[in-house]
Image 1 (tube, helix red, strand yellow):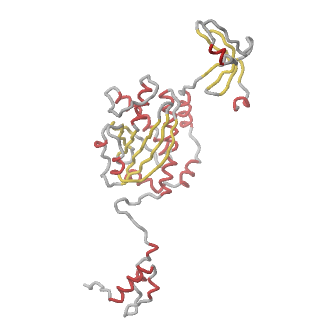
Image 2 (tube, rainbow, N blue to C red; image 1 turned 180 degrees about the vertical axis):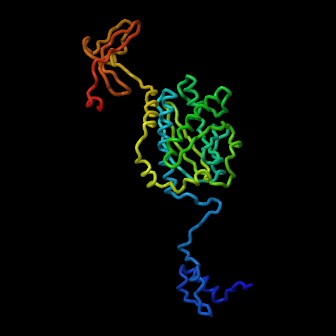
Image 3 (cartoon, rainbow, N blue to C red; image 1 turned 90 degrees about the vertical axis):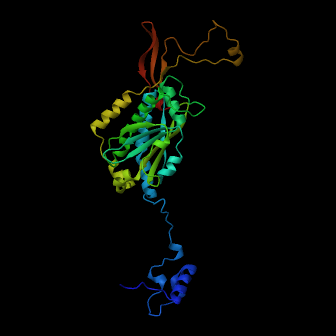
Length: 343
C-alpha cells in the first residue's frame, strides 16, 4: 500500500504564499523533484473560491425559480376567475415570488392557528401544502356566509361550521393547479386534509429543500397572502423542463376544444353588475341641503330618449325604461358604438 505524500517545508511555504497572494504561480516555488507547486496541482486562487452552504444546497438556479414563478401565473388567473364566480365579488390574484428554502424555515413562518391544506400531486409521489393567510381566509368565509368580506380583529381558530366552508374553498383553489402544471407534466391534484396547527403538517424532514410560491390575493374589503409549499422531491422529475425556452415552446401549442369549452363554462357563470343611468342633474349645495320629502329633481333625460346601460363601468347598450309585470325593467334598443365603449 502506497504511503500518503507528505509535503515538504518548501511546498508548505508555497501553498501559504499562493493563498495569501491569490496566485500560486507568483511564488515560483518548485518541489525538489521538479514537480509543479501545490497551487498548480489543484489549489484554487482565493478570488475564484465559491462558498457553498451544505445546510442549504443550491438545487435550483435563479432561472429555474423564475420559471416556476412564471409557470404559476395561469394558476393565479384561475384562482381569480374561480373565486370571483364563487364569491360573486371581484377578486385579483398575482404571483409575487418563488423561493427555495428548507422546510424548517417555511414552517417557522406559518401562523398558529392557521389555515393549511395538505394535498397530493399524482402521478408524483409526496404531498404539498397550501397555506392561506388568516385575514384572507376569514374574509372569504365572511363573504360566503353573507357578510361584506371582512376579517376579525383577533386571530382565532376556525369553528366547526367554518371548517367545511374553508375546505371547499381550498379544494377549488388546488384544482386550479392543473392550469399551471400542464405546461411541464399532467397532474391530478387531490385535496387530502385541512390542518389548523402547523405542527401537524410534516411534509418532509426539516432540512429538506422546498420551493415556496407566494401569491397576493385581493378582495374588495381584504387582501392577503396565499403560499404553495412544494418539496423538491416532487419537482425533481420536472427540473430539466424548468426553463423559459421550454415553456415558450410549450405555450405555442393550440388550445384544444375541451379547454375552450371549459373556459366558456367558467365565463358563463361569472356575475357582472348591470346598471341603468336614469339621468343626471346639477344642483347647488344649498339646494341639496334644502331638499324635503316630496320635492322633485329635474333630470337631463328626455322622456322619449334612451338610457345608457352600463356593464361594470362601461356603456354597452342603450334602452328604454318600463315594466314587466310588477317589476321595473329596461328594454335594450341599441348597442353602444365601439368608440364609446372604449371611452
